[in-house]
Image (cartoon, rainbow, N blue to C red; front, side, top):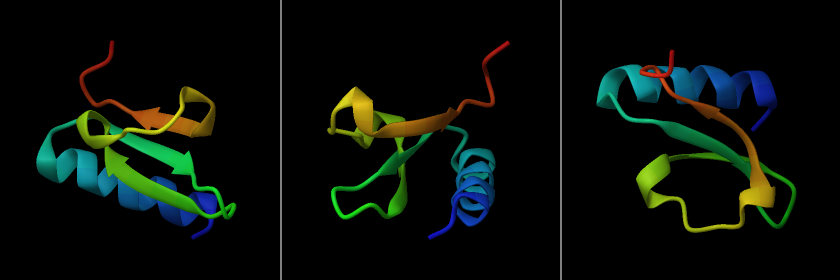
Length: 55
């Protein structure tokens, strides 16, 4: 998925679930989106994080 698509999906998911969402780059180079509490990868894989509650 492209970065703009991943970002739009992550923002929609964050607004719907009201949780922080992590956009990360998988081992094959693709971008994926997951709720932050469920992310179990390395911090180096994180591209960005969407947190609606951050100041």
